[in-house]
Length: 214
Image (tube, rainbow, N blue to C red; front, side, top):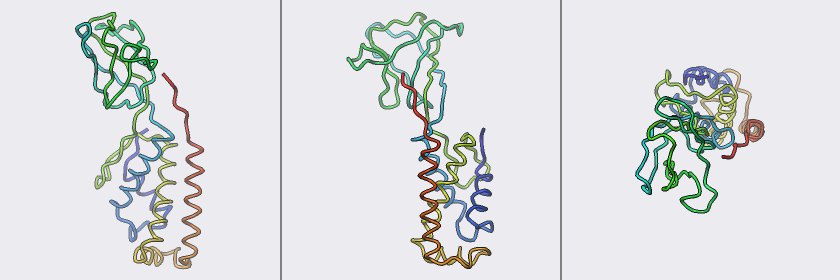
């Protein structure tokens, strides 16, 4: 389920008590949102299925295809030109080029002496990939992060934004004069930031998912 940057901004400003945008600019929060999207990718990766066209290579030639969305493949099925399933190619066993497929530098390499059942067709690559970042400066920009990922990104941004106030006195003073924040001292802010960071650590543990192996 995709979410717009505008929706994330509204929710974040409400949580940060900055609904009038007096403390953080859209661009500042946008950078934090993208950092959060990147951060959750390591513990809660996006499940992806990518389809890639292929042509049978000359026997013994280097057979590779570039991947655009899958960064961690777990299974590769082969379909012929009629889109019918014909076989599954197995991953490398670590015994060299001929022991199975492997990924390097964003390319999927197959054994040089492997012959596919069909001369042309498509690979269906199952695996994991990165969540799409938002475009900073474009509130209509979207990311496909699901509800669980959205919640985790918000927790990350809140922790980072409150920590920013501890290092920027002028920004803290801007935030402090906003209604609801006037009674919060520097010491109180420190406690809020520490609590937010602890919440982020707990959130990472909550959403962590184990990647399937090929």
